Structure formats: structure tokens, C-alpha cells
Length: 194
Image 1 (tube, helix red, strand yellow):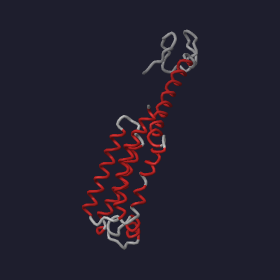
Image 2 (cartoon, rainbow, N blue to C red):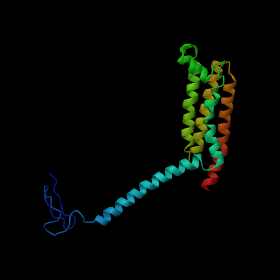
Image 3 (cartoon, one colour):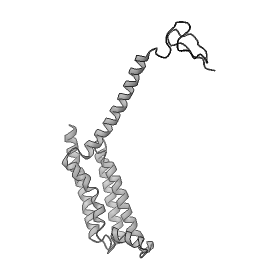
């Protein structure tokens, strides 16, 4: 069994001692060192608030601190629009979804375009999330790696599938523009930090 001790005189009070004053020195057990405890709690709370503020400042500095960063952020969502154009032959995101919903298309017939478009969405989300931390030490390198992988996977799948349509070329142009925007935005982020 654990025994309680008085914080002032250090004498044992017993496990089931429930009174609010020490029987030996008379100190109030509930309020002894209350100011120090409150100050420690306030300091800990301030550390947590500062950590949240640093996190929010990184996201702000990485995504909306300048007009060029906002343009890049909007650019990340444009592949969804470009996939509505014919990506592979006459297959677009809209025709693919409508064909699957109406059961006029077999999944086996459009498996590779479906995989390609799904990867566009998933890898684009990875690029977006990565870009939210562009202002960190390795942010630029991480952005370039994610965008390069995204572009290479997209091109390889396009070459495998073949019969690339206008949507495929527009999406590829968007990915190349994203890489260029990472370089421009890296300069803007460094300028905002300095």
C-alpha cells in the first residue's frame, strides 16, 4: 500500500487520510504549492499553444502566404478537371464513372485507365499534402520527389495504355507546371522566411 506524505513536513499521513490539513504541521494539503503548480500548468499549456501555432504557421507559409503559393494550391486540383476530357481514346473520368454506374462497361475493359485515373487522384493527394509542409527544411525536396514520382507513374501508365487523348496531355502539362511551380514557390517561401 502506498502511504501519503505531507508536502511540507514530509511526515506519513497514511493511505486513507482524507482530511485537508496535515495533523503534524497544519498545512493545507490541497492548496500547498498551488501557485507553483498553476505556473507549471500555464507553462505547459503555453508550450502546447506555441507548438500548434508553429504548425499552423508552417501550413500558412507553405500554402497561402503569397499569391504564387495560392496559384500552386489551385493548380493541384486541376487534374480532376483535365481528367473529364478524353484521357485514353474516348475514355474520360466522366465516361468511366457513368459506364460503371450504368453497367454499360466491363471493369476488365477499362482496368488500366481506371488504375491510371485512380493513381492520378491518390498521387495528387500526396502532392497536395506534401506541399502543405513546403516551408519545412526538406519541404522542397519532398515536393519535387512526390511530383516527379507522380509524373513518371502517369507517363509510364500512359505509354502502357496508349491512345492518349487530350485530357492525358493536359494532365501531363499540369504535372510539369506543378514541378515548375514548386521551384518558383520555393523561392517565395525562402523570401517569406528570411
